[in-house]
Image (cartoon, rainbow, N blue to C red):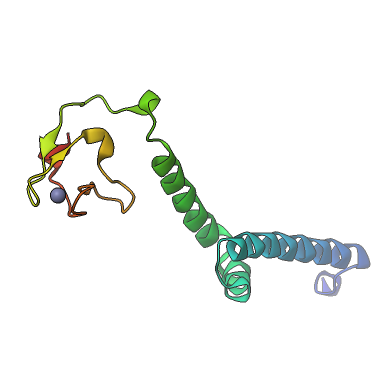
Length: 120
Ligand SMILES: [Zn+2]
């Protein structure tokens, strides 16, 4: 049973390769975060210790928002086309112009949050 404790050369090589692969994946994730204006070393540490899940979640949220911003063309107009008046500034708002970039529906004129009933 004493042999179980010591790793054979082959096992050491495999574990070493796994660690190298893991670090390579972490570095790649950190480089992606650095490209979006974040700290490379901070995200390298986060990725090494907490896996790449936090970075993936952050990047996915960003991509999701980018897609939402990009889809403002006539082809993707929402089903409700009737304009309504903003509760705050009383200006006419077309549902297609409602600003969703901050996560909530906001008036394109004054930027204040719109009621769910108004938007949809
Ligand atoms: Zn308004």
